Image (cartoon, rainbow, N blue to C red; front, side):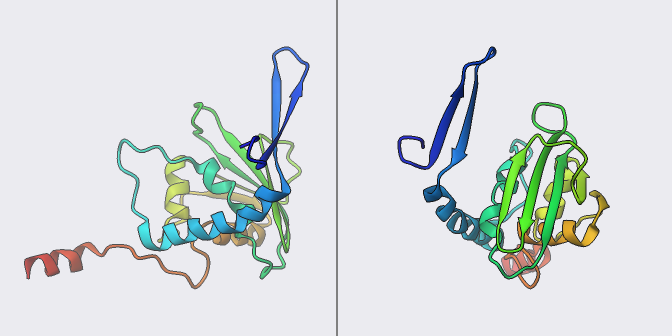
Length: 175
């Protein structure tokens, strides 16, 4: 992606070695397209994860910059914490919203966020899925700010997913 001009790579002369990657203007312009593809997937292809599937919540959270379309006046910082992250420890993502755009950073835990939302992987999947069940998430701080971001990451208000209705599907198969 560096060769394609989507990322810049900065290498530090440290031990252990450290490399930072940053989005270029070209890739930031692609973010809304990725956001709309994600929305399409939610609306038309969403299904609960299979037992063997691993859901990368970080990938979903990283779509936030592409999902902010300027229709919200929401401003502030929100920490999103997956309490049982892939490494076995908590993973934290900070989203900074300025109304017309959003930026995301990872591993930020300095307690200065305006709002914080925490939950297990399973709780996040339920919250971000079509049913939007947020009961498993715990929030603190500015709740309207946190829920505004979750609306952007999930289907958002007024959107519905094409979720299969098991009873109707069984009736049509039988008959």
